Image 1 (cartoon, rainbow, N blue to C red):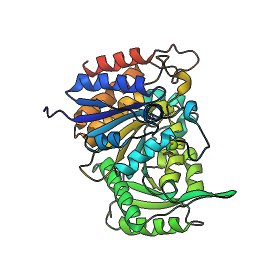
Image 2: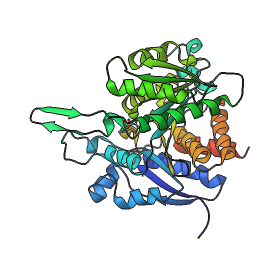
Image 3: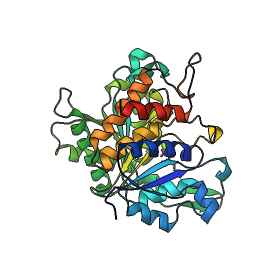
Image 4: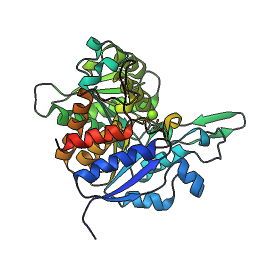
Length: 358
Ligand code: IPM
Ligand code: MG
């Protein structure tokens, strides 16, 4: 057996297969990896009737890391509570692999600040990290229909809040790296209404005393949503529960002007395999046309190298190659302004590949 890292590839649906194939090319150029490609999402529903089979979950748990494209599409959209849904595959992986911490960094690429819907002076200097709790809250509480009503229950334990708070404080320390800025964690909740949020605020406050060098502030989620667009550059690390994190991370993603640029990492206990995926979805409207933007998947592969495989040097190589290629003006259609010419997935991949060895 080779001792190359074992990576499960889950291309998924829509543009997923195109962007994962592109990222695989990049990884192959950087070293030796043992890839194991599997079905998850709508494609797995078509083949097996469920979005995630036990075999695929087992393969992921036994891997060194999982690289995911995207899942879902109109073909599998349904409101029938008993029909399988592609998203169940993703939720099953998060729970089954114990991936409680979702990291979504938002740092507009210097070449793309003009693409933000916000004015350049407002976005300048934005460099934040959303740390989202990923295996608790309303996503995993009891839910159901009772006659003509329905319910979803939000529950959090002290232990669940404590471990994600630590992820947040540690990420803030790491990002500051002994440099000049004071690391800051903004904990987001709805403590004026929700009991889970009051527990959240209490526990995060307690954990903070173990990280005296990190500033902590608390924001209510509605206020946080507003401040993210009015003063994005002032955020450092945002720590929040599952549903708030889902919403705020899409909002933060749009600060960069393209959802097509943002990577994410979902991590569990130290030493357990993580899952790495672009934040954008499966974009079924452009699937198969060769125009999907592979950059968020490249940056997710970089996060995999850094957080999952202990290869920060390779991660930085990918990240700076992406920056250089954008600086040179290459754009996939989603990034292109009206007067830009754009390139497809292959040409973008080729350009980043060449830059890796420049
Ligand atoms: C995300 C997605 C998922 C979520 C969906 C696809 C279940 O929106 O990763 O942010 O809500 O967590
Ligand atoms: Mg989301």
